Length: 138
Image (cartoon, rainbow, N blue to C red; front, side, top):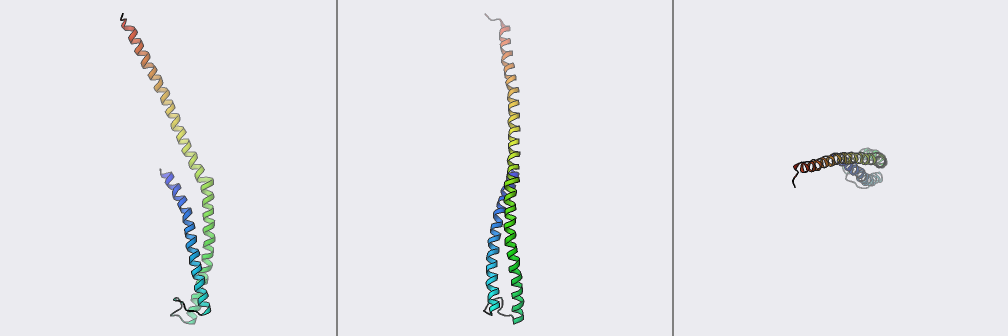
């Protein structure tokens, strides 16, 4: 059960990268709009109480955030793709193989036990017939 839980968690993490990417894209859009407003001198909450040099600094920070967020978006795609490939090529086939091996081992043990049980069953009826023959009831 723990193995399937780990596999399901890995799949949900893959989907989580898409969510992180969408949030980063939204943040990127907001930062670009704010940087554009600060650059053109329009009113923003971030620049409301700042001097011109403070606005320039804020614009620089926003531009650095924009660059980093763009890199993050690309990296989210790369990580998601690696995870998809890992799940498809390594984790899921390995999981299936281990489970199939466990199942086949269990079925093999079951067959051997049934063969032993069949032998004991045969011995029991054979002993029962021998006992009946010894009674010589006519």
